[in-house]
Every structure is written in C-alpha cells, then in structure tokens.
Amino acid sequence: MQHILEATSLSPERLARVFTRAASMGNNGYRKMLRGKRVALLFYQASTRTRLSFEAAIKALGGDTLTMSEMKQFSSNAKGESDEDTIRVISSYCHCIVLRHSRAGAAERLAPYSRVPLINAGDGNNEHPTQAYLDLFTIWQAMQAGRLPTNGLNLLFFGDNENSRTVRSLAKLLVSHGPTLGVRVKSMAFCGPNGFAVPPEDVSAAIGHSCELSLPAKPLYAGTDVVYITRPQREYHNGKKLVMMPFTEKMANALPEHAIIMHPLPRTDELPVEVDANPRAWYFTQSENGMLVRMALLWHLLQQ
Ligand code: CP
Image 1: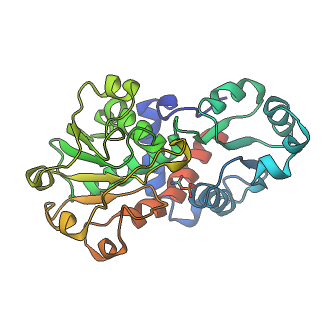
Image 2 (image 1 turned 180 degrees about the vertical axis):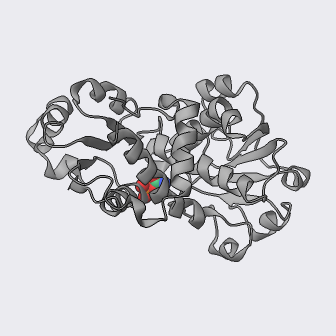
C-alpha cells in the first residue's frame, strides 16, 4: 500500500509510468479499471479543480465516490470528533482516501490511521503532490510535442512563492524527478512581492540555488521557457496586506514564442483575463491534464 503525502512519495520511475499512462487515458479501454472500487473525497478546505477532477477521474474509470466537502461543518468533526478517528472509520468504507486539509502536515499525521492509500490533495501551505504531477506532466507534454527545449529549462516562479504549496511541490519534483523524465532545469528564478518572493528554506535547500527578484527585469522574461504564476495565498497571511503586481499581456509578449505560462488556478488579479488569448497561455490545458493524471495515478495505486 502506498500513500501519496508529498510530491516525492512516488519514485521517478513510477511517476514516469503514471505519465505514460496519463498520455493514453483518452482511450476508452480504461473505462472499467476502477469497477468495484470506492474512493472517499474528504475536503476540509475549499476546492473546485482537485475535488471535481478526482471525482471525474474515478467515474471515468468506473469507480464510485464517497464525497464530503466542508468537513468542518458537515462531518462529525463539528461534534468534536478527531481527524484521526474520522480517517480510521472512513478508511473501512473505501479503497482510497483523497484528503484536503487546511493544516500543513495533516496528511502525514493522519496517514497512519488509514488502512487504505491516502492521497494528499493539499495540506495547508505545505504540499500538493497531485498538482505537482499534473504541472510536471504539462511541461513534459510540451517537451514531447517539441514546444519546449530539451537541453535545460529556465523557469520563473511569479507570485506568492513563500506560501504556495504548489510551488513547493513542483520545485522539489522538478529537481528530484525531472531528469528521469527528460525534463532538465537550467535555472529557477523566484519573483513576487517583497517578503513573499523567495520560497521557504526547505525549497531553496532542495533546489540548491535561487534568486530573489522583486521586480523582474525584461531580459529575464526573454530567456524564460516556463512561467509559473501563483495567486496571493491570503488565507496564510494573517491579515498582512500584500500588494502584488499582475502578470500582464506586455510581460507575456516579452517571453519567447515557445514559452508557456502556467497557473494552478484559481486566479485572482495576478493573471488578467487578457492573457488568456495569448498563445503562451497553457493554464487551462494544465487544469484539463488534472483529470488524466489523476486517472493514471488512481489506476496505479489501486491496481496493485
Ligand atoms: N489547483 C487547485 O488545487 O485548485 P482547487 O483549489 O480548485 O482544487
């Protein structure tokens, strides 16, 4: 039994197999792969993409879902039941648990209470492994299509790098798993509002190098292959006012033609809708990939 608690929970070789399978998930041969399997979707924190793409993935593979959103309000958590007891009980009703929680470290803390694989669907500002898988899959896909160079990518993380779980998971995954998948990184630059530009210490340590840029210079855009934008994660700011400049159409046009713009979504003002028509905008392709990658991951975890 394998839990997915952080992006590196799957080995690079296993992630490569998930990607190969995700790339072929459009074909109908997979329709019954999860027949007879139930997956519980437990969300203590708001979600659109993660919850519904998991649900769509499970249904597309012929499986069933037990879904509970707003766990704090509608589960027996509201009566004082511990998360540990909740996981222990629910894991006896299903074959896999997908858990989103507002507390960093919740997935790791609760996994020992689960008798079935537990997938971290985002825990506070810590990790979001399946988002990192679909993000890396999107970069890998762009590379397979000949869109991105194979001799080393320059990435720009633009936004609230300090508090973003998607940045933490993706940056670490790129370094640890990218090479096995043929995704080589030449440089990663981090820019964002003062105090929020630089990722936390553990991410910098994993990457080995980083640079802080509060206002990126134009030449940086010209050499960038992938821009990864994140929204201000206000839920972790404790009321601190954060002013973030948007990634404008002008900035998008300063990128090379082959560059791709990514965003895990949801977006707020940091990514104006005018950028959507830019041929470099890949964020909706990215969210579409979420269902395919989650289908492949569930197949991988539940067929063993
Ligand atoms: N990217 C992401 O996790 O989106 P949701 O919060 O809508 O699930």
